[in-house]
Length: 197
Image 1 (cartoon, one colour):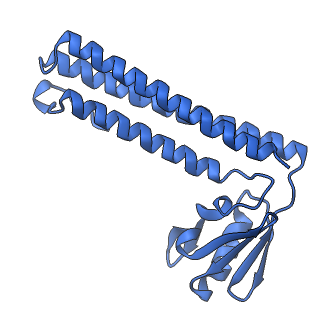
Image 2 (cartoon, helix red, strand yellow; image 1 turned 180 degrees about the horizontal axis):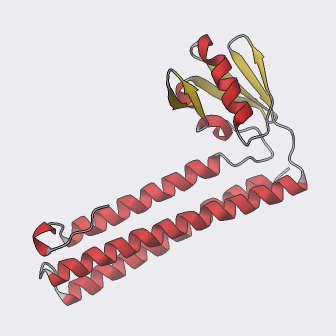
């Protein structure tokens, strides 16, 4: 993000600032959703491996671009490679990941048996959920800080009045509260899934 050094560089109106803040907060929440999808629960879930990156064709590619991923039953994830030549690369990426799952290769299909989680592993997963939620909330507060700074600059540049500045800051604070609440809700839902048998 570029911060504007003087008022000539500052071309954003109040609506633009609010829209930018909201878009950045939405992206932060989307990032949290993706991170939480990678947290293991007691059930097989394609999200567990969806974002896993595979070194193939000279670059790092998410597994979902190389294969279809499904969970036909609560204890198994099935990965069907689009190109049989990538099976070994996918297998290697799974083994190198922190998932702790052992891939079983059958032609161009990889099966992952997802064992039930022990109480200790569940506690670790819940702690990770809390950590990810806290990281997202810090990111949201950073977006708020950036938005407030830009509003202050707009007021100094006489592009908004003091009253407008205060109103915009209040709206930014409301957005922050809303997105923090959404982040908490996502984390609670994922925690519940982790703790379920």
